Image (cartoon, rainbow, N blue to C red; front, side, top):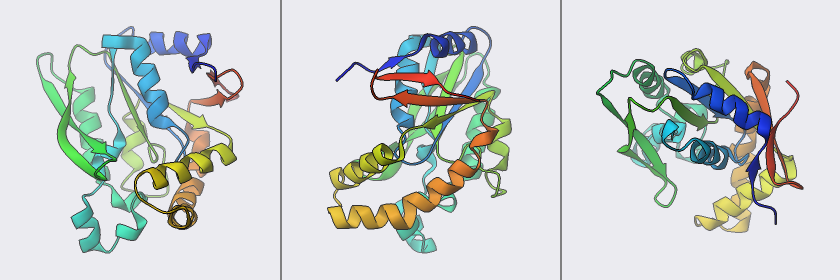
Length: 220
């Protein structure tokens, strides 16, 4: 299996984004598209010039989802603190020179957000944030997010591969095959359709080429 790489055109644009004052780059895509993997690769390429900060840190806690009656739809737009996420992005845009902004992370092994897990330093020029709903335009709670990002890349992968990744992920964290497939059909795929409906709002499309093992810019 080839080593995963970033295409030259992609790294050139990434280097440009990290060459000046603070900028925020968003990576968006349907569940299972590999957003966190791509964000980690981009951050690794830039080293100290970048920090990855996931949207998933703003998942509502399981106890709150149960109180709201939304636990069976975990991952849907209304199971996140969208206003809190937007507030974090504003803080990151306006970060003072000596401030440290602490962002939450999401730990899949416990299926819960963890507050204050990611320190973001003012000297870091590029913040890479990834998540499902960065471009969502049919929910007022999410509308401010896109305007807080300097650029958004939409990550597209083959649908069959994406669904297989989702199934394996659900099984890895405790669901049976039947439960995983049922969750994908009832929750992940309705969310995916909403996400894909907003892909035209992205400034760039990123495609993973499984033959070369390379992330490339696709057609606009």
